[in-house]
Length: 189
Image (cartoon, rainbow, N blue to C red):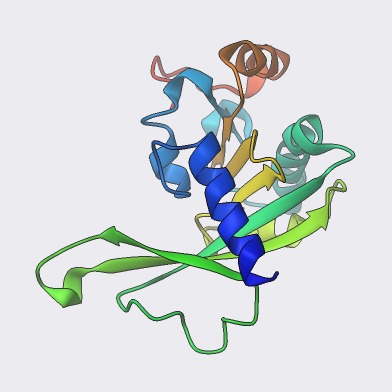
């Protein structure tokens, strides 16, 4: 993407989600009123143990993603965590968007940087199954999938997905449609 596109993407994020940087696990705090969490396996089981369970995980991820993004393009945002402010070598040409200091500390050895990379693609069921399986296995973390207007966010994690929608009414409709995939915990976690 040209440099102006990255600036536009940053501006769009700040307009739509002004109270939080694009860090999936931090979105729930300021945007709890439009958030819902779905679990990847029955009875809130966290990790798949066989191919039948992986099929359930991918079916649940893709069903919600289809609800959110069918017929549209999406941004798939991935992150690399480092203790250095510089983008990891060789990554600048692979869709680098921006870097964030997410854990500041007076001691530089304890600072954490979050380097974000973006790919735009037409949403099709199964088009990111390899990535979703890596997320489910905790080999990859901090993925965000969003429409190109950044109105809807799907943040998969090992064990489920956090979803952020434009309104609480839209959140409630999606939550009710997949009620069997919700946590029994009162906080929704």
